[in-house]
Length: 383
Image (cartoon, rainbow, N blue to C red; front, side, top):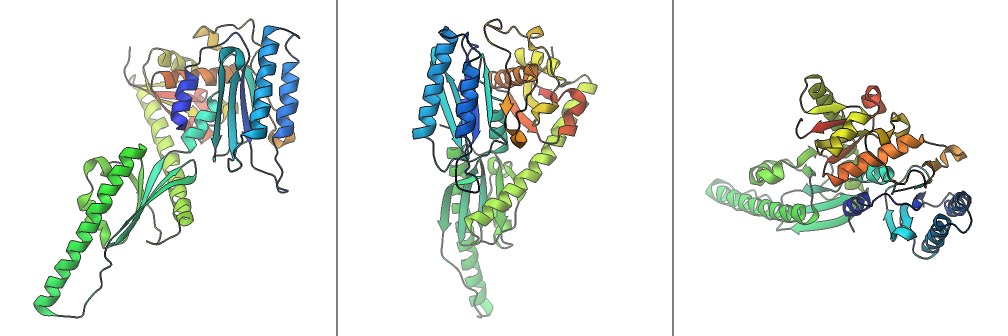
């Protein structure tokens, strides 16, 4: 199932009066080929279980979750996955897993009253689905890339033309003949690209094209495709998929850095002018609740987010029965904590954005939003 659909469904999970487990694991083997997550999982889950009274409904629900999580990791973990996220609440009939080739920076365990979606939403934001078109005058490859890996490769191949040493009218006729072949090839490439974009839900296209085919491609690209072209990359027409993958990911990284700054500047500028922009976590959350937000801009470093008492902005259910949420990790080999209100705030922001169809952009440069508590937004309308 596409990651976006899973995020949307998890964001709709109502706060529960029972423990909701959110477990994030880096499942890559260490330098000796051994897993690095089993010891963390068993130790941390057991420790959290003991924080609930024995034989209580909360403890029984959590213990069932632990059994199911351990069973999944023992039997159903995909060896090729670099990370896994598991969300469980047996009393709330929730057990969902997300296995990805993307990488989570560290193991993390969160137990609260709803799924902790910030790391998963960040993984989605860092791993957009895009297409890379590599073509010359007779061969094209349309590569679909998601979460840092190749998920589809469509080839379009036509007649390979050759130059001729004939002169006069014969040369002119032959040249027109060749040009017709080239035009026909480009038309087929554009039609194939259009189908891939529609079938795969592509919003960004990267192009690598030789100097002969490029002007023809520009002539044939319809507006709906031309508007999705975000950059040109340079690879050989018959380059290996791994080479295209690296070049395209480098280009997307640079594009994201540029657009992050542009979006933050736009939100701040609009806020200063009293227009369609807002800054700060509390005001942004209030705007999300009212459905005003078109795009949420949130820091990619949870430690840089300003803690805000979410309960002041939106009522939180079952606070008395669920312990304050704490995100534990194995960063640098030592446990680390994130302020409970920051964790709760991040979850509310992500959930409300998903529930109101607001786009989410994780801003990688922590300085861009540092003066605004790590949060800003572009608005659809003002009240």
